Length: 247
Image (cartoon, rainbow, N blue to C red):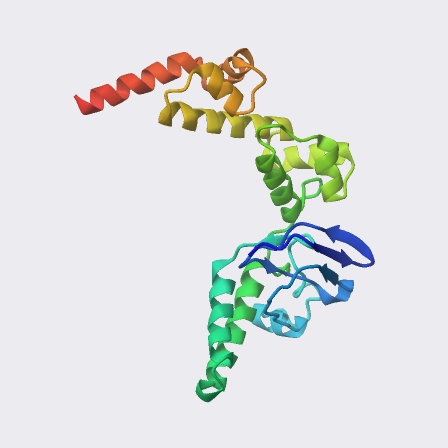
């Protein structure tokens, strides 16, 4: 069940007001004084992991960053492993007669180890190159552009979400990915257009529209720049290849 009335504050400011979705995992640093308002009924399972335990799993006893969370505050993930461990623990906790403490201890140790290897910003993770986006910023920008693939999204919106200036966002994204945000968005639109040309008989004008291009001419120009041929030529070559394979 999705919850719509929800807002998260960290360090006294609002950082997230997206909806909760069933099975979603939120990772919060308690040093940032998180406060959550939930307007609708919600059942949740909480894991409290000491930073010392995370550092012990990573073998980084003296590293002050070993327990940091490598995600933007309020950024949620759909993690099937955490979900399965949580559901297993709930099954055990709901059956007092069959409660098995050693099993619970192992499952909790497993959650801690899994978090340390996948979400902890310890010194064992890759160093962020100066001038690039942080991993959470890059993921966030890409997801926001995917979500607005059709209508597009402004650089100012992306920059605000990452806490950067527009110029820093563009420079950081290009250094991180090799292309500007606009070019990355065009590449995703071309990917979608190729998928549509391969799976439907829609006209090129309709495909251009469905993929978010302003018109067929814009679509053809961008496609030719990236593939060396026009969409019409590419589509005919694909059809010829399929006929040859079926002959």
